[in-house]
Every structure is written in C-alpha cells, then in structure tokens.
Image (cartoon, rainbow, N blue to C red; front, side):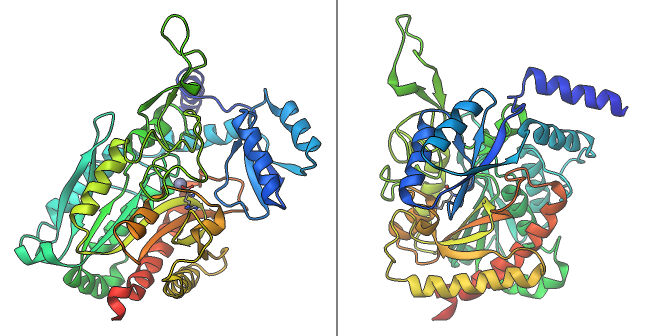
Length: 438
Ligand code: ARG
Ligand code: ZN
C-alpha cells in the first residue's frame, strides 16, 4: 500500500505538478537598500525569486538548478554573502504531498486541523456550520473568481435573522489572498469554529459577548483559483490565475507570445492605495505584478465591493498571510508614520503579547509598521485604512518565523498551535480597537 502511494506521488509529481527538483533556497545577507535593489534586479532577470516576506538583514531566495551557478557568480560579484538553507525544495514538496495523500478523507461537511484541505472542503464545512448554527451564522456570497468559483464568507452574529443584526458594527477577516500561504485559510477556519463554539470551548462566554455586539464576517480563502492551483499544479503559486498577457507585451509573428503567456496578478498589490508605485513590477510574469489597473482581478474587486457596501459599519479589518510571524500596522507604501500610529503601536503590543502568552517557548510575533518590512503599494489593509478611512486595519504574517527552512510548507502538525495562538491574538486585537475604547 505504502509503495503504491509513493509511486502515485512520484507519478503525479512527474506528470502534472510543477517540479522543484533540486531547486534551492539560499539566504542572502542584505545590509543596505542598494544590496536589496541588486537582488531585485537579479530577480527581474529571472535568476532567482525572492521568497521571504521579511527583508530585515537577509532575504531567502529560490534558485533553480539551471540558474544556480550563474546566480552564485552574480551574488559573489556584487559582494553579497549567501548560504544554502534548503538543498532540495522539490523533496520538501513531495514530502508534503505524501502526507496529504495519506491523510484520511474528510466526511462531507467536516473539517480537521491535522491536514490542509481543498477549497470545497472548507466551503462545505461552512455550510454545515450554518446548518447547525442557523440562528447565528449565514453564508455570504462575496463574488465570483476569474475561474468561476464562488468566494464565500460566513457571517456570524447573535439573532442573525433580525433586521438589527445588519446594523451592528462589523469585523471583517480574510485569509488566503496569496495562494501558497496554506496556513492562512486553515487558521481562518479555526477562528470561525472557535467563534461558533466548535473549538476553544472554554471561551464560549467571550464569544457570546462578541456575537451579541458585532457581526463578524470571515472569508477564509479569497483567492480560491490560486489556492486550488497550488494543490493541483504548482505548490508555490502566489497570484491569481487570470491571464495577464504576453511577457513584456511581446507577441510573435503567429499571434502567440514571443516569450510566454503570463498568468495572474498579485492580489495584494491590486488595491487602489498608492497603487503601482513601490514593491511591484511591470513584468506581467512577476510575482508582484499589480495588475493592469486597481481591482482588475475579480477576487479583489468582489471583496472591495463588499467592504465598500458595509463601510459605515466596519470597525476592524484584518488579513492573514504567511510567513514570518508578524503583526503589521498601516501603512505599507511609505515608512512615514500615519497620524494614528500611536494607537497602532498599542494595538500591536497587545496582540503580540497575547500570542506569546498562548504558546510560550516558541519564537514571538513582532509588531511593526508594514512598510518597515518593505515598502509595497496596493495592499488590502492600506486600501481599507486610506480609502475607507478605517484606523484599525491590519495584516498578520503567521508561522513559521522568518528564520525557518519550511517557509510556506508549514508542517501540518503546526496548524493547530498557529490557529490557537491566533484566536488569542484576535481577541486581544478586538479588545484594543478604537471602537471598543471610546
Ligand atoms: N507579505 C505581504 C505581501 O507581500 C504583506 C506585506 C505587507 N504590506 C506591505 N506593504 N509591506 O503582500
Ligand atoms: Zn502573503
């Protein structure tokens, strides 16, 4: 049996899955902004791909076996020190795939935190929660993705069918905007289960109070096309899946692409807040291509429209990414402090303290202004902050910590501790938002 499944893994890997066989993760020291720019220019030449979210002191980059020698030579010639961190990314991915294949299949509507699950499994669990909590939960259809998947959220509040419930102050949480950050949707599912008393049962009083006061809308996976693609085809896909045109806009004589067709935009560069100015690339094939214009991606447009329609009630926006264990406060496109940064600092301190309290002995989360990580325009939290004018608009980076070798492939046994500490982080966050302190 084991042999058969291993064979299956190898076959799937060989025939439909993008291979990362002998790709390496290399850590490069970056002392200065100039060094970082050199690395980014190697990235635009296609020699490497910047992998880590944090750029404080070093970055981790992904290098293919084909480019390795050339890449090392270039790094060396600019005087950048590098060390190998992962010698075969492909092997790491196969290991994860094998674990997924050996996980027990989920019965319809159920969910577990010992494995990562497909989009339809998440949605059918939301539907089963709504069926068993019909007085406090309903499904919201936020919109449709490019490939036609319904982006669903769950809206939770006490006495949900009453007219008054629509007017309650709103909390919005989303996950999975970046496809490969698998622990994000998993954490959102746990947060939903906890709010409805299916998990964290010792917190039922607190959750009851929250449901009485707020309407809480959670969209666990707002880039379902990308998420599914990471399961079927390319584990390290980040963007959406809408074709964005030929690379550098160049066609060949036969009307095809001269280089190649590019797919997707970075959905966290696609929002109309300082759109297109920093931390982006006009290469349509780039990981940080912001789209042709703000909201040209179906999924960001759908979420934006929902948020706009409820902006008069919105009191908290939080979006969940991985990895690096950070709590990021606005704004992300400039290191200039926003006028409400003192409040952000206080909130950040409270959130990271609550997380540290839950899982003692693991590396702490760090709170900082988002642009301190690296300036990047067009992210969702900045749009909510700047355009909807909401003070409490934040980005989480979940496990692993920035020093990790596993990166986006957080082993499934860490889903639960990640999710648990983030229930506590969220409760501390809610306690500290402006709305709860006036
Ligand atoms: N790591 C996420 C991303 O690259 C969030 C970045 C936070 N925003 C920022 N402007 N630095 O999209
Ligand atoms: Zn992300």
